[in-house]
Image 1 (cartoon, chains in turn blue, orange):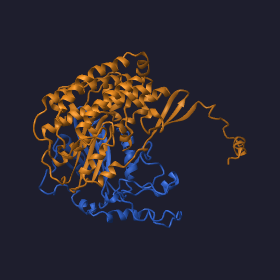
Image 2 (cartoon, helix red, strand yellow):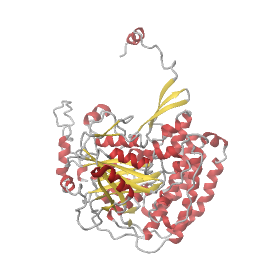
Image 3 (cartoon, chains in turn yellow, orange):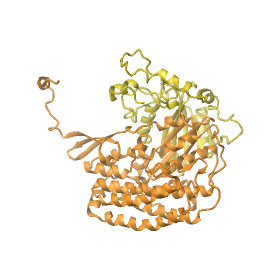
Image 4 (cartoon, chains in turn blue, yellow):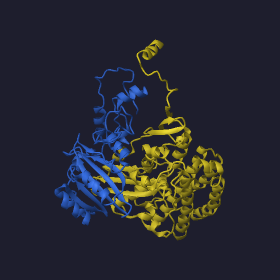
Length: 229
Length: 384
């Protein structure tokens, strides 16, 4: 509830109406929201540590166990340390792969292992990490009735080849990842925003994008209103 | 403002003096305020006369940033938001979300709660299919089914209202089970409904199945093969109408679905007519599931033992269910705090809509309306 309240900067000066760019554009709105909320509101420190290893979590609750299968061992033989991790967490298998090897692994999963249905492509942002993004493919095989997740880490500004040639459904899914996170895919047939308008600035699902942040310039030009809030 | 001479000078400068009337190709905008696009979908059509050469969907008009909101809410607080995605199947959305959080918490809802969930989710599937049938038939030109289906859907909404107080965005389930025990007379109401509906479904079929206009407008329209469905990630009745026998309720059963006996109806032709037949049969199968569930519903608690403050351990989970429109999945990343670090919703409508272009190429403009209807999209879910 608390962070829904408007930043104190917006209401008092509607009369001013000056279009000068010198007034604070977006960062103040972003900063005011954590200070307004009483909750810790600091995900970065909590996240940065437990994420990469995932094993040294507290003994309470389930932990990922090594995923042993002919598929994993053959992948490990081919790519060695490129396969960082192959685990099962709560009965769900996932692979963590180096970004250099991930396209090959996806190809193998599609062509040789019959993972013919790409359920979803998505990402998560960890601003404290050197490689800020997790990119995740969720795959399903109709013949095996099996799911697997493939995860890779990507730095800000890095890009990957598109997987539209492997699964045509990746077209819109990658566009959404691009729209929300700003991750680009080389060779994508039509990489542009999908949910947000074309001229929008910023990628909302990045952690440094505030929850009430918006592209004020776009809103003022295109909607003719001071603010969308 | 525009000086006509500038236009003329263009012609003199050797610009192609073809106006759009001479050209064979025409770009037409359908929506976002078009009644047959089921919300705010904009489709840019490239036409050659009446023939569709290509389409492009413009979506996002209803984008509310549900996934961003999730990161700023606790697990419990986010629960009602999911109802606002596919608002004609809110129960399914809630079921998927609650089960996903239960999975990451590693708890299981008690059997009675699971049975209540199945009953409500299947009632919701019926409501969703009825709404689909009414609006789809209306788009194609048959007005009567709309009144029939809305009349009968009302009975389902009444049961929802009596159960949880809401008709549309129900928020029927909680993480760990159900908040409400069934009200007195719930079983009678559901049983009455089970007797009431089958003749009504027959009635819809009587109006449409052999109706010459309906058959002409739907047979062979919007064809998509099973392989294309899989390649494009299309799920739900659209996939099954193309001959792929796949339903998450059978393939990877959740809630109490493994307890029930039901068939997965499939089609062969992958056209609009087959999708209609598949959905009609699915409604009957849903009734079958509800009948079994209501007869065998066990006694017992309806809420699992879960902590007051939900703090899942660090980890990631993906869980999906068979929503009325296809595979609805939730990918949740927990950082061990009370708020999800990331929630990704895998919406069936969004992915299915991607197949529109393939399905309408080479067909007529009027068929685009039929195909949008047969895909059964809800823009609240496409845009989130």
